[in-house]
Length: 165
Image (tube, rainbow, N blue to C red; front, side, top):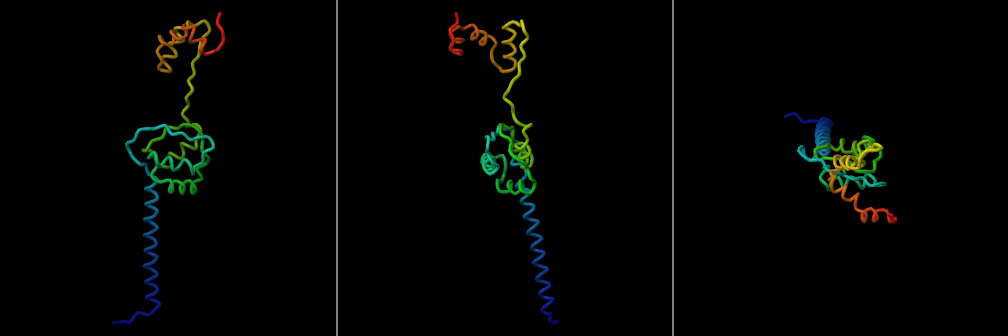
């Protein structure tokens, strides 16, 4: 049997260590990627609110607690590596079927905010019942109930605190 020299043994040990390092790094990368995938492929959208002045360090744990992302830690790493930008304050429609990158892109984009505003145009000379019908179609309010309120003098007084003659 041939005796191996010290340098050949050292080379084999070094090769095994490099190979183990590559396998470990590959496994860590695959795990990192899996943590950025959607939590659930079949999930409904929910409204998630980012409060004014709130930081990503505060938002990420809430996203994780609400089941929208898998890991706040890996999401922080993703943000550091990809320079995600700053949060937009307001309400967003998010889903557990969105990846972490999609969720981060949504909550940093002010154009994706859910707007609670409704625009209704009233034409001069339009009948009050037609205005009530517009409210009914836009806001799911009964036009008859709305007309009753508008004709209730006590209700109108309660809104303005002004005497009506």
